[in-house]
Every structure is written in C-alpha cells, then in structure tokens.
Amino acid sequence: MSTGMGLQDGCRVSAPLRRYEMLMYASLGGVEEPETQEDWFRMKALYQIGDQYRLVSCSSGNYVGAPGYSFFGLFREGTIILKMFNLVHN
Image (spheres, rainbow, N blue to C red):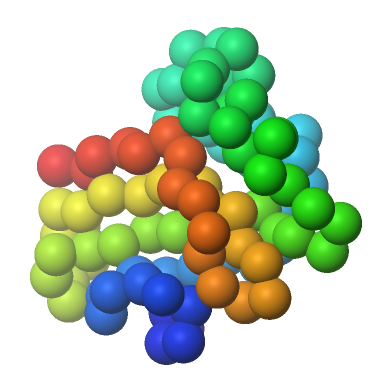
C-alpha cells in the first residue's frame, strides 16, 4: 500500500484522517499534548488545501507483533512531504 508514496516496503498507510483524529491518536500513542509540539507547528505551517494527514505503520517483519514504528504523515498529491510524532513499537 506504500508503493509510490515515498515510503519503504513494509509500511501501511491509513485512510485520510481529520486533524482532530490525528491529534487524538497521537495522544493515545503517548505523545503528550501533541497540539503544543514543534512537529505539529511545522505541519500546520506546511499544510495546503488538498493535503492529507495519514497514519503510517512500518514493521521490521512480516508477522503479527513484529517490532516497528509508526508516525503521522502529511501527504501532498499522494506523496509524503513531512513526518510527525515518531512512535516506536517493541
């Protein structure tokens, strides 16, 4: 699902998220007060009409429970232009 989006193999990309959904998921993922973080200010500054927020989950293996990481991405015309809130999964 990540082919052509500027991501490595093994990454899954969510459907587009609304701003409030992204902030809620970031908070649930352990980011304290995500709306006050530098990553969020940077993403807001780059956002243009038509851009999409999406959750990207990447795994280091092809099995359930494989370690990996996830982050929120700002996508423009189907390509990621900025990553925010890197979360590590052990």
